[in-house]
Length: 407
Image 1 (spheres, rainbow, N blue to C red):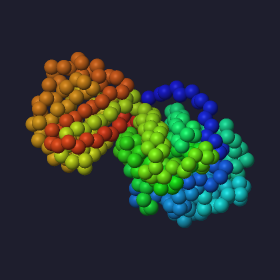
Image 2 (cartoon, rainbow, N blue to C red; image 1 turned 135 degrees about the vertical axis):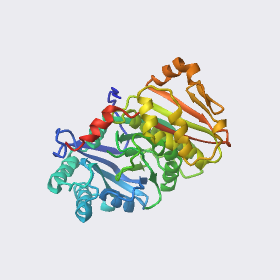
Image 3 (cartoon, rainbow, N blue to C red; image 1 turned 45 degrees about the vertical axis):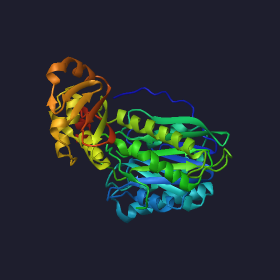
Image 4 (cartoon, one colour; image 1 turned 60 degrees about the vertical axis):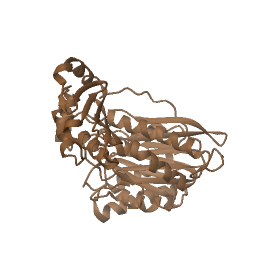
């Protein structure tokens, strides 16, 4: 699904950016990005729950736990995952270079990587790229940094808004990358990839930022599915440098909800853009489950449909046939009476009390599934719990792309 998103100037007070080329990508595009706050910033982060964690994730988890960061150094074209001690050493060296060049405490610098798994990261090449990024830092280079972390992305993904916090106007802006290997399951607690960085000049405590992530993740990145694969490198970082000089936001304070709502909206827009750019995707489908027996059942049902190759292939074919949907519901683990469920494509009902009625509404239902975006809504009539996932179709182009990804 190709979108034309024109870059608009994005400035976040107290933050600088860089995006440079060091030869990690065969096409010569920017492949090293740097995000740096002028001052140490309050921070919170969440990382992949995949048992195989990339070297930069392991370092990031350790350093972000302190609740303060100042810089993120990112490379694309190589995930630095499943690379052992050598991968950890190179990731640490990347941070050390930023520390020396910018006179930043090394403990306040974390790395991120995205690209091929199991391939050693070329040390000399990437370190030269890190040095070049440090020299290129500018408050005007938001989009260059974003390009530097993109891999199979078809278009840049960013979102921004201004909100009043403590009588001060503050900016909340985010950038993200990802098109494939997208089914994030990120956790805040210590322990083709989605990388996301949300930045604000608001003053906020690390505890407030952690609460924002805990609030926003279930409704944004942890609610999206492209292909069902959870990456080794998934990372989201939220940084607040306080340059707006507002009264610091703490959990439960009067301004917390405003900042939390703004951060959630930015993350939701970013997450939806990732699904729109799903490798080979032609449609975005909102899967909504209602009337589940429990929140766990609702999540199971939504997640199973969103991940089902048969459902996703039907979405690609604009086929309103619901046999695949009810089949996925049946093995999801959710408890319900099959004779009570209702299913809708947007407002067109295709299953009524457990009986498929697609034949009666075929033309209207097919018209809905031909749209680039539509909602599949299921009411299980088993309780009051609900859940939502955002997924895309599974196309021929996705299979073709990922069958020759390394060549």
